[in-house]
Length: 201
Image 1 (cartoon, rainbow, N blue to C red):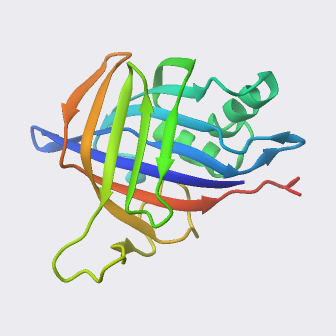
Image 2: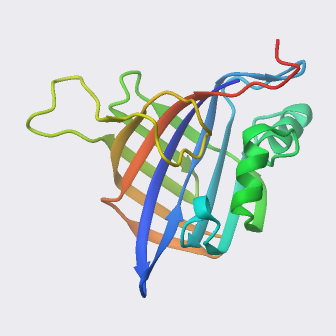
């Protein structure tokens, strides 16, 4: 399965800790689960926690999940198995590490877009959440180049993936399942990645 992952990292300090509120989305460019094709489908989430899940010192992890309503019954089930961790692999490892309380899950329209040169990317769940991101750039960045980070110390898509493209959220809104924010300017990263299981063809 090949997936592109835009992940706005949204940080708000609370006391001496950092409260992270995030809006990750997964877009399946090409992929299948057994004989079930998943090309073009999306999964997105709202989440929050305090502390550092990579060291197991975080608290109060919460999440709400949106699954692409365009999927048929088999596709919806496959997306739930993969991204819910029941199919194993990295999603299962990360889910066990993060361990959120799921506040809600629904099948929704999800609009995700990615410019081919990664200059911009966005995700929208109408009436629920949306984020639009521009690739980070500056006066000394070569035209058409992207700010990339290699060997991320904490990659939500797992180890051994391509470099992350860094961006800045032009807009980021959420109002669903108790998550609520309206802001811009926070960092975002996009990680092209590939997962495969033991029965991958």
